Length: 174
Image 1 (cartoon, one colour):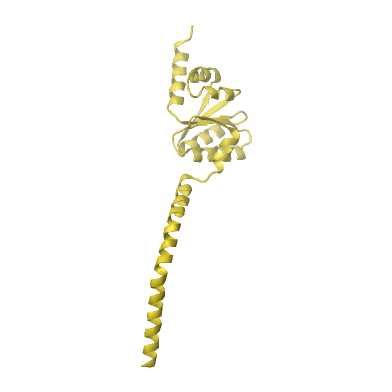
Image 2 (cartoon, rainbow, N blue to C red):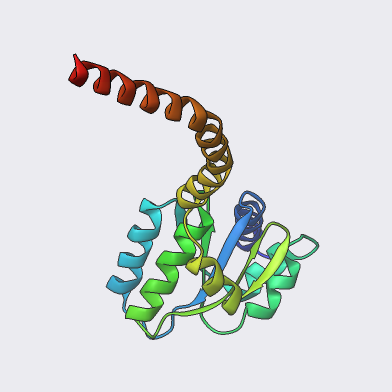
C-alpha cells in the first residue's frame, strides 16, 4: 500500500509536469550544493524552476501522460528545469553552465509535444533569441518595400536634381 505522502508527492510532480510545456532534464552528479543553487537562481531569473527529481516517483507521475517517453532519461541523479519563460534562453543558460561546469550533463527534454535529445537542446541554445528573429523578419519584410520606394522615387529625385542644376546655372548667368 502506498503511503499518503508518496501519493501526494507523485501528484505534485504530475501537476508540475502537466503545468509546463517545456521541461529540460539534466544530470547534476558531481555538482556541489552551492553550484546547484547558483544554477537554480540563474534559471529562476530567466523564467525556469530547477528541481531535483526522484526517479521512481517521477516515472509514476508521468505515466499515461505525454511526458511518459521521458522515462528513458530517468537514470541516475536527475533534475528538471520547468520552463515558463523563453525556452531558448533557458537552453542557452544550461548549455553555458554545462560548459563551465562539466559535471552538469544535459540529458534531454520535452518541448511542443516532442522529446528532445541533448544535441537538440544544444541546437536550441545556438539559435538566436526571439527578439533577434523578430528583427530579422521585420528587416526581411521591410527590405522590398524600401527597394520599391527607392525605385519609384528615383525619377522624381532626378527631376529635382535637374531643376536645381538649371536654377544654379541661371543664377550664375544672371
